[in-house]
Image 1 (cartoon, rainbow, N blue to C red):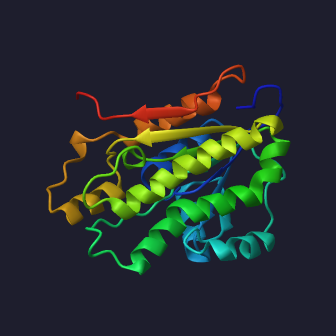
Image 2 (image 1 turned 90 degrees about the vertical axis):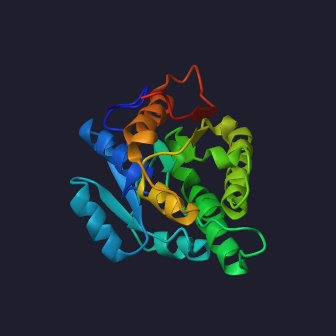
Length: 238
């Protein structure tokens, strides 16, 4: 599918393509003939992603080490322009403030906030050239924080601030920014959350990743006369 006013396939860079919402998005974009680049934390993961998503290209860079992203991407071929940058990857570690160590805080903020900020900075020239669209997969925790969720919620509150500032700054360059706030979604991360909460996991209770992917693509495919700035997706009635 071509971007409005352009010819040829649209070009996407996506994080978190190995499972859940990211994997669903990668499949959908490839199925419609778009060019998909997937960020992988290391070379082994890149090979796994290429095997799982035939036709996708990979870039190696670890969001958990934001300070090394510039060096890593600078040694690899990158797309010349980008129609979308899709920030889907994330990590979660629950626990009371009294138990969370600086290591947990640093790892959570790096992967969920500082890494996405740095990746965005590094590919802004390609996004500006393509008059592209940045999508941040946030969370309900990015709007309200609850007990045990302080580190994750703080990273997601920060991600909202990043998106809002980026939208205001990049409007003059034609870059659009959307934040999507999914509720609990049936992903491997949700399995981990249930384990940490000590609760039984039932995927049927939660949003299908394909449904969140549909919401994201609705925002991405919207004609340029309109913009979805913030989109909340919650579990419905099965």
